[in-house]
Structures are given as C-alpha cells and as structure tokens.
Length: 336
Image 1 (cartoon, one colour):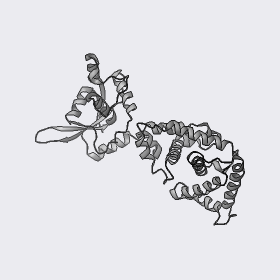
Image 2 (image 1 turned 90 degrees about the horizontal axis):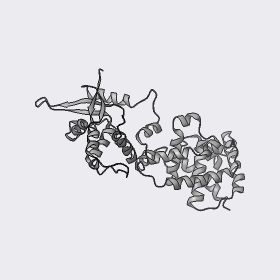
Image 3 (image 1 turned 120 degrees about the horizontal axis):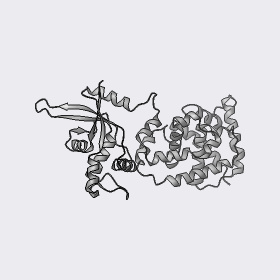
C-alpha cells in the first residue's frame, strides 16, 4: 500500500466536515469516549501551537455523474471532532475558565487556529475491508490487548483514574496480591474496578458491568473520595486481624470475597466486628478450606462448598454469591 503524508490547514478539515465531504465516523471507527477534560487539554495543545500525531484519511464514495466524492477519516476521529466542536461552539463541549471559546479569541488567535498545520496521511482508494484492516492495525500493538488494556485505550476518564488510585494503595503491596505481570498488563486496575463496582452495587458475573461503569463515570465520578475512604477503613480492619503472609485471604478470589463482605458488614450494615474473634475464626476457616482441597472435609460442609466456589468459575456471579454468603455468615457470628 502506497501512502503519502502532507500538511492540511485545520480550516480545510473543519469545513470539509461541515460540508460532509470528510466523514469522521465510518462504521469501523470507535465511538467518541474522550472525557471533557481530555478534550480541553487537546484543544489547548492546538491553541498553543504544539503538534499532534498524524491522522489517516482514505477515499470514500464517488458520484460518477457529478464527480463529487467523500473522504473517510480512518484514524483521528476524536481529535478532529473535538476541534470541530470547539470551532462551532458545540454545547457538548464544556470549556474551563482557562480556555476561551473560539468566538472570544482575537482575530490573530482565530487565524492561528484555522491555519494550524495537521499532518495527514492519505491511504488512497481501497475497499472497505482493507481500510478496516488498516484501522485495526494502526490501533493495535505487537501483542494482543487484554480486556482492561482495551478499556484503557477507550476510557481514560474519572472512573478509570479512580481504579488507578485504588490499585496503588500500599495494602496490595503489603499482602502481595498482584504479580508484576498483573501490574504490567493492568489486571490490578481491572480487579480494583470490579471490586469497587461490587462495593457500589452487588455481585455480578465476571467483568460484565465494567464497561458500563467506565462509560457512565467517564466524565465525573463524585464518589471517588468516599469510596477510597471506605476502602481504607476495610484495609485498616484487615490489617488488625494479623492473618499472616501465607494466609489464603491473599489469594485474589478469597480476598475479593473477604473485602466485599467486610465492607458490607462495617460500612453498609454498621456492624461492630470483633477483631479478636475474627483473628481466630478466619484462619480456622481457611485451614478447613485447605483441608477440603486435600479431600478431608465433608462435601456438604461450608468449607468444601467455599473451596469449590473458589476453585471453579471463581468469578462467576453464582460462585461469588456463594462465597459471600459463607464469609458473610462467619462475619455475622463475630459481631461484638
């Protein structure tokens, strides 16, 4: 595929969108998911004259009678659409006090904005499947992205940032919950976001609610500080139990249940849990779970049922509920 890169003035791209000559959202493009803060930061990049990476276009449909045609914006939709919203004064864009609306710019500032040089790589005329393949390759890496990495590429807003903050809590390092690979592949952030959603709602299946929350709270997440505070209360309580570095509590599925049920008991049900009693009961229970793994527990015992729910399909809703009921019952028996 032969491509060529040229500079186009921003005004040419903006007027092309207005006249529907340049189509910013062919069917293969991603939806607009930038937060308002992302948009403002990008607009200021252009107003201050800094460059941004090249965009990709391709030839679209052509009317053989009139000779008129269109172009597809293959990559760069969010950037160019954001600038178009700024130029047109769209109500979808909420500027901060440090960023003047376009209509309030001085004459020179307006001309500088309109004459801004955008690097455009023209892919030429190709069938739609070829253009889709180009787009997928532009937005991929040398290895397959996991689900959280894909979400991160699409949602960089407030809920995702909250997940970053929660995952950075020192408690997780203390108990060695996450491996270096977990952190490298953002599985720690995914885990913390699923944990937080469960704190806010109830048990659900695997990651089924994650994208909805990332999208819903992409722009604002007012509960951030409150949830971080509640998480710290739970961490503080768990530290006092002195469960030991080799406790089963620090396995991901087991910790998930213990954290959620402790949060439910202390923060949602306002129960005063006995640290002394739980310091004895939890290790004893986890020992029984370990015994179940060795075939030394009755199959109808809570320890055996818990073990099976932590071993098989541990992230399914049913398994989470079953483990939660068992740990929740243990916590209820430790009310001071």
